[in-house]
Length: 189
Picture 1: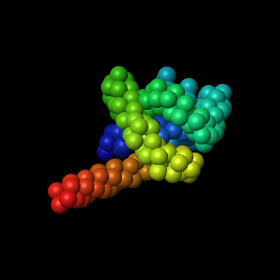
Picture 2: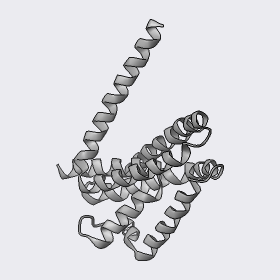
Picture 3: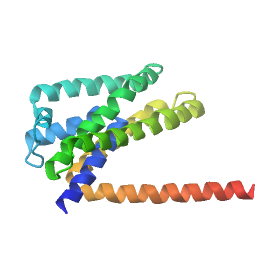
Picture 4: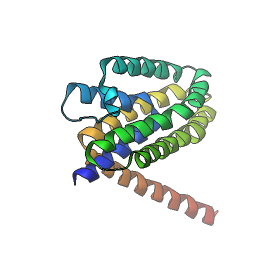
């Protein structure tokens, strides 16, 4: 059961990295540094180093500010296309290595794919739609919502990993409902 919870944690952290690269890394590092909830194995234990935590905090502030400024947010998303999947890979591997025997290459690949997928959906589908429908006025609230979601998912992934599994099931059910509704509307039209 502990290994399964570790997998839920790993997937949740890498998915939240797809929204914001630095929040899950900061959450992992802070929790590992100040509590006994996480004991990071080398080389991931560097995330709990106070200097690395400060660096991640500075990078987080830069990303959050850049994501709230028109035009800069598009440049930020372009840059983050490379950063977020890597952060997701690190988050997945660091958290999966805590309780499971997953090979590091497999863990890194899973994290890369999960974070990369979330980032692509965010930056190639959701953000352009928000920009087009709100003339850019909706980007800041959506960015704030993404940061809050990334933080909540990161914390839940570590503190209550079963909640992540429940959220994934709910998201899949909602997606299937939306898809069925969409296809039935096309058939009747």
